[in-house]
Length: 128
Image (cartoon, rainbow, N blue to C red; front, top):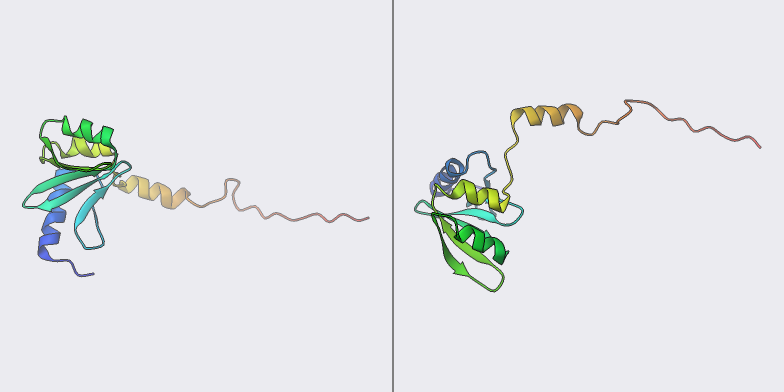
C-alpha cells in the first residue's frame, strides 16, 4: 500500500512521542500504537489521542497532566494527550514494546527447537 507523506510524517511524530513502543499503520495507513487495553493514535496537526474501551482506565488517563477527554461513549472513550504525557499513557494502555535486537537474536536462536535436541524417536513393536 502506498502511504502519503502526511501519513509518513504522522508515523515519525508518533514514533518520537512514544520511543520504544511499536507503531504500526492501520488499514488506511495512519499510525497507531496498539496495546492490551487500547491504542494511541495520531490525529494530525501534532495531536495524539488515546482510545480505550475501559471506562475505569479512561478515568485514570484523563487524570494525568496533559490529558483531556475528547469523546466519551457508553463503553469507550477517546482522550487527547500531549506529547509529554504520551509515554505514561502508553504504559497505562500497555502498548506493545519494540523488540530489541538482542531479543530478536535470542528468538532466532532458540525458538521452535525441541527441548531435548534432535533426537529421533523409534517405536518398539511388541511381539506376541
